Image (tube, rainbow, N blue to C red; front, side):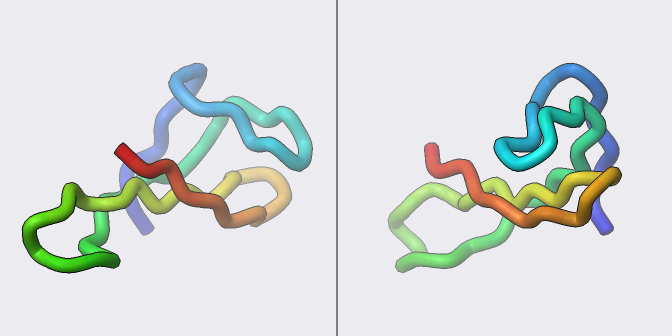
Length: 50
């Protein structure tokens, strides 16, 4: 799920640099979208807020 990025993001759990990223609206509509990230190696899920 999402687009696979290499070297743009780093997994905080295993330091892998191959991360699937997609955007999702998690707060009210006037707030920016949240980047949802999943590591392709260990499956760890994390978020990046803008």
